[in-house]
Image 1 (cartoon, rainbow, N blue to C red):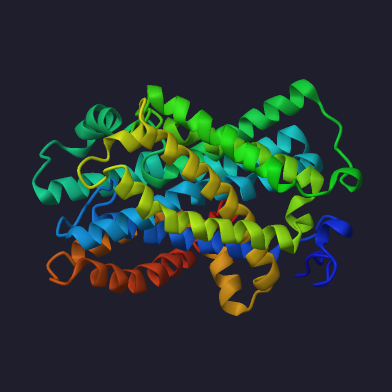
Image 2: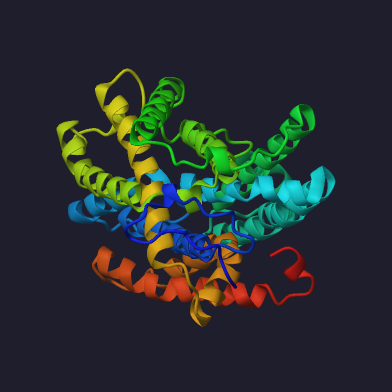
Length: 398
């Protein structure tokens, strides 16, 4: 498959010769989705072995070094990877709507997002959790009694586990349809408005998103979730902003119009911010108590919200540049991973949890165990994904 060329040589910035919108798949975006899917799997494996977050199962044998590295790894991921997922998902929403119209676009969204969301949250996840709780001896009620009474009370109505993202994307897509129906904007022409935003504008957006996150966390600190829908609202200032930016980016052709110089600059900023995290954490007294970072009128909460926001935008820009410049092609393996990334995301929660439980009796240093588990979990998730997609009618959804 072809993509529209970035339209630049190393001596001519992309913004000076803005290429047309791609007329077929953007391979570097497909490869970014694969990267982010693998990162989500690694993130949750690290939570299992480093205790640096919330998961169905935690190994519980972490030491200080493992916990510190796990917290650093997960904090960096949390700062940007789901926001970037929403950014690149939103990028393709306006064009899809333009081609299909409201009715067909909505139908496709409900099929591709709504069906997996319902099947996973109301069939797969309850069975997975019920079997696990029963085997652990924590549950004696029959499934038909536990599911309607306790499951919805303890685990929410929908969007449980990693499927909160699919739920969020569906909600945002529905709101976009409503906006298009009410406002009926005319599709913008990209040529006159294709110049990529300057660094001052990017920094201002990061500042505004960071301040919005800080203000939300005065009310609801990091870790709080709206249980019925399993939505972690303390992160939603970033998620809403990145989804809107993705919609605008399509109209203005920013993915292909990103100048290499801007991409390199913000990638360097991202590296500096990643290295700054331990300094910020130690200066804020995280060893004694991490609560001030999570929310409230604390300088640590403000610093963390701003660090998170600036890292998010810098990583989004830096990775877009990096993948467009160096990963804008696919061989056989990359095509396989790209086809199966969505399903791998959908099923990875039970896969890595069962894998971790199966290896629970193996006594290894937690970080070493994490590395070995990752070598098994990633091919296992993608391999099982390819099998799931061969089920009858699965190809229409997945």
